[in-house]
Image 1 (spheres, helix red, strand yellow):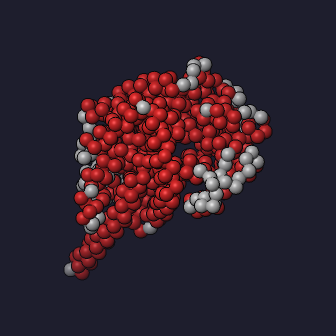
Image 2 (cartoon, rainbow, N blue to C red):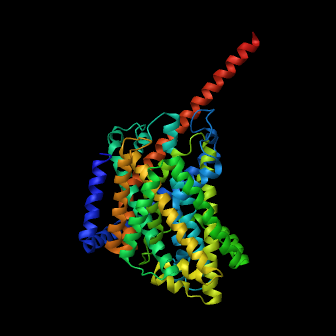
Length: 505
């Protein structure tokens, strides 16, 4: 179930996309429209619930519980840990959407927003923060915490089903194998979406730097080359491959952001961060539950629902990977490290790149919005080209996306191998090669079937059934945390009683 079912389904879709891309694109679009219309509310409520749940766990009495034994220490240093989870979590997406999303919202924002106005610019930045802030990282955090809690405190296997098995409902227990299969499918398509975006971004960078053509066939070639790189990285092992690449990646990303910050409108960037953070916090609940029942608008489905589905589909992959590198940390440390810290980093990234792009568009007349409308992957390079040392920064950005591509693929292979082999922490190289080839095949198939639209559609469709699994994992985690906390309190009480008895003697 964990291997045959997902691999078979993935192969069918890959072959469908290669031999009949038009029909796959049409059916996918119909499915996306139906899911968005009928189940968009489910994505919003589940993700908001995960945000609230993560906040409660972090700041409650349960926050001191450790993912492991009381004397266990973290395997990785704090900087290395943060670099790995951030690179695996959303690296490619940040580079792709850092400029493209704010400019897209600026020209065609949420319903009720007048395009190309100061309010539209503020709204564009606020929703960029919203889509890349607390909500996605809370999804990752709860899924990862559920896996890590059962793995390190209950000595369970690193599988999605290990958390749901603890629930007292027999139908849920019997569907454990199906849950693992759904996790594999959601992961494969979520990662493939990111790889497809990464290929488009690399293609845009090569076009900006070397003048190469931007087309699907070039992007397919990029996927093939990058796949060979991340398969090679994956077979080297997590400690050598992922850790090394992730650390390099964070340094390159920080360098690029620093260059744009210093060479761009520095004060405007600081003001953008300050203003947007305030409006984001004040509008958080309204944005979290926004639907459009009285408007004929697809904006929420195309943006918020897509993002929530994307994060949910990525959650088994990112969750298992974060759990793999988080042994020995407390629940409070874990949630702060996986929710608050990455959210702040994302806010800074969007302030630097989105704030600079909006300033150039509004005050300097640089046609970044037009570039984004024509090809989203070119928005970043249009902005960089208008800055000093633009060519150098375009090269750095292209390298950054390539390394993010490799780290995401590397991590995905490891996690998919673990899930499809019953929780094996070090899958065989043969399994890694198979999964690397399959997710590359998905990305190629979806690109041929409709580019970015097809990638988004597949994510929303395959994330829906896994949303229910995530909800069940959250319930199971809550039950387990309460049980372990009560057990620790009972053990401490018995210890105090014995100490008093010894002292009295």
